[in-house]
Amino acid sequence: MAASDETTEAGWEAEFEAASRRPLAQRFRYAFIRTYKPVLDDAPYRSFDTTAEYRAWCEANLPSWLGYGTPKV
Image (cartoon, rainbow, N blue to C red; front, side, top):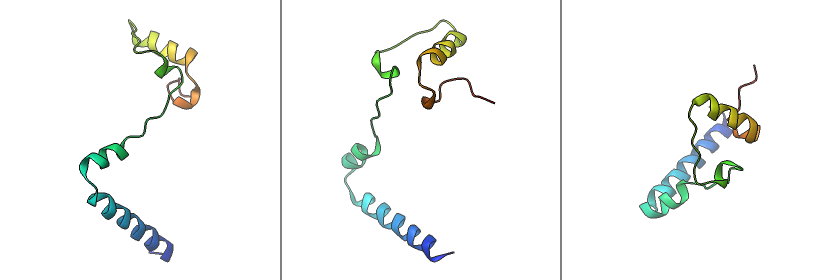
């Protein structure tokens, strides 16, 4: 193992130890990061009759970086 790998691993272990000493409520608060997703978060819900309709809506309305479009092969 290289020295930089050992340093990185030691850093991770130190962070894990520090996190394990925090109260559970605080760990839960830090565990989830709220990220706004354009279009998806703009309506309380959407429903579709078929998966094909859902996929077509995703392809037409969502930014490609969200990953809901048809994969390009």
